[in-house]
Image (cartoon, rainbow, N blue to C red; front, side, top):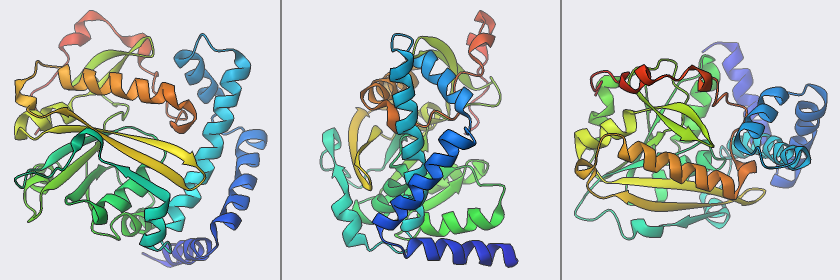
Length: 303
């Protein structure tokens, strides 16, 4: 990996050894510089919030933006802290709410998990790999920085979670069915697509945007139940993750039904705690490109 990797690793370990109180002091400093000095993606964030909440006042959207930036900074250090965080303390800080998923896994049955970019997902990856009765498999996009990608990979898999690159299509199905324990195959399903093929357009906060259909196609291919996950921040370093059983038999659905249900679920969850969503992604960058021909822009199932 080279010297850069070892320097990054040593610096991350140093930060991880700090108590939460000290980490949040550092987070406050980072927030000040990102929000007030460098104004990191401020224009994009405010534009996204205006698209999502046109009925809110500018002052209300500014408040949401500040909450987002603070949560973003906190999330960075909460992720780093996992390197030295005892699992017993994690259990005190993350409320695992089975919700309507109940006592799954039943009869050794795997499930598909759909989540969005809500802060708390990093702790969820770490937590579910050890706490639940599932082998937790998360599909992710590797970072260009190989050293940082390796560090995050090691943190995320520390308690048994399995990571599978979204570019490794040959292993996506295998990693959902090849473990001794039932699998919870997790998709962050609100990724912004680079191409319009294999997508479907839905109203998201009142504007049409494309959503990838990989989650739905995966469910139809495997017949595994689809579960939605929402993450809510209860305070600094404290979260609740709640599961909702969405489709026990995904093959008994119409095309687009699973994806639309996910979009509506995510939208409602964001409205309940808007500051806990990642607004620095350009979720609406394709919004003005929609036309009726794009409704048929679905290619053959890549799985």
